[in-house]
Length: 410
Image (cartoon, rainbow, N blue to C red):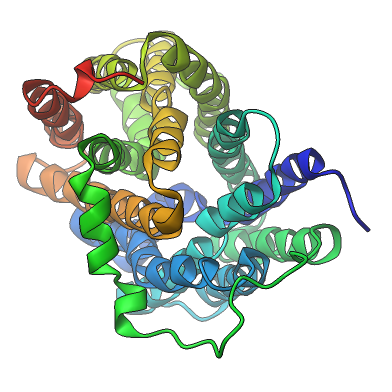
């Protein structure tokens, strides 16, 4: 079945939402798993980071392949890998080390779907404003992760943490089916010779040097790295943070904390789309700087709100989530539009590799600071932990403004 090229975007949005259903499974079960296995905060953070470690290992292969073969094929392998990781986590994991393994496999599966999914669109959409399709695609990351919190929380409350991973594995399997059945292959393969992937194809350092020599493109890549440190640390620890807030204030939240985490993630969708529209008007670099500074301030205020009434905490959490995501589409669209056409796949690979490298560091940094600052029972420890993840965006803005990046035209 063939669709008009612009019809591929809704299909890929549905597929991406399904593929991302496993994203927040661990964040939802972090507290009960920590208690059952006797994990420290650092170990809990490292399990969350293992997801991004798997992503980083797989993304060079995935993006190198998308420059040579139809990204659709890469996506199908990624969907199956994500499902295997989730099933393994639900059925076979029993300690810190096995959890690291299966979370890494799950992350590798996401590497085979997220950027290759974006490449599916960019290879097929040849008319209209491509950046708007990109903005919707990146914004729907929030839809997928939001449903991940909601579904995982519901399953946890009814069946237990192992069923969370086992049932959510149906999500990436459904993404596999959508792409297999409704996204047609490209008319012509990109690569006519024998398919050989060498080390320099996986880590195309020469191409990456060309990308980084473009200060504008490099700024979007480093900005994305700072962005993901804050984003993924926040998303990994938000449920545990809400649990601590409920204990500190002595008030029950009006909804289950996993449901609240999911709803808050949904606010990131319009924030990312509207942020991209604002960026088109005032300049991408300028908007990135505004969003990052505002997000850092709100993160510290949110961390300081423990012990206060639930409605204030939720308002601050929503505001923080909005400004974390306000520059997400802008950073990715800026890189896609800045990169040279013949190395666009390599540029997107470096962008994703560096970005999810931030995802690897963020949750572990957060957990480590919680441990050394007084553990999850300390108000001050949460403030220090949030400060440790928002500072990177502030440092990025200060450095790039000094080098004139924010003053360049969009």
